Every structure is written in C-alpha cells, then in structure tokens.
Amino acid sequence: MRKELIIKNHVQELERVTAFVESIGEELRLSQELLGDLQLVMEEMVVNVISYAYPEGTTADITLIAESDGNELTFVLSDKGKEFDPTKKEDTDMSINPAEREIGGMGIFIVKNIMNEVTYQRLDGHNLLTMKKII
Image 1 (cartoon, one colour):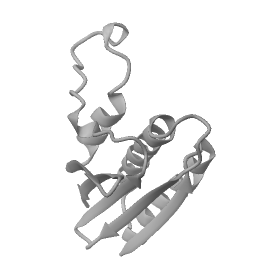
Image 2 (cartoon, rainbow, N blue to C red):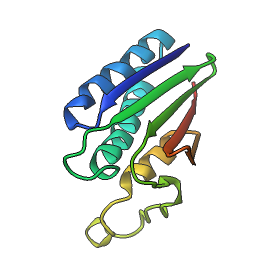
Image 3 (tube, one colour):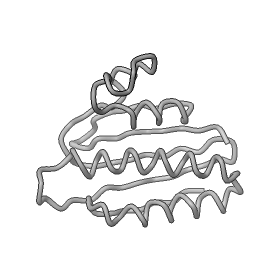
C-alpha cells in the first residue's frame, strides 16, 4: 500500500490529514487506539511544519506519504521550509513540573514515544521526516 497527500501549509488542512490517516487505518484494519495515536503523530508534525517552516503569509506544499508492507507503516513528511531536524530536540524531562518546563518539545517527544523509529534528513532543499510504526 502506498498513498500520498499534498496539502497547503494552512491549519484548515488538518481535516484532510486526519481523513488521510483514517483511510489508511481502515485499509490496514488498524485498532482504534493505534489509529488515534497515528492521527496525533501526524497532527503534531504537520502543525509544526505549518507553524514554523515558512515565513508568515507564505503558501507552500506539504507532502505526506504513507507506505505499508502489512507489518510496518511508514510515513514521510516532506516540506521545502527552513531546515529543522526535530529528532535533535532534547527529550522533554517529564520529571520536571509542567509549569517549570521549557515551552515546546512535547510534540516530538510524543512522536518519538509512539513511533518505533523517527529519522530526519535534508535532501535537495526538502525536510524529510520519516516515522515508522510496527503494526
């Protein structure tokens, strides 16, 4: 299975991302729990791109590719925004009181804890975030 979704970097596009992930979940017959986790992962990472990858007022494409061999599901999130490797963000220290924690970083922390593998590369002017989950 291979599917692709191209969206614009606007918050209104999150509905399309949710529907895209849901269609994959149905096709692969994923549990509701796993489907919810994957929707959270995709929402967190797409919101990061929408919020931080491009200068305000810029419209650009974000591509989401999903592939599965039946045992593993791989998502690749691609954009041409400013270079940013979220995997280098230090994990959030959950032992610190939430009111005292540095703002930001929870999204990638959640993604790293849900997915089995998260990698980043910058290739030909694209940010490529690859996220894998054993299903």
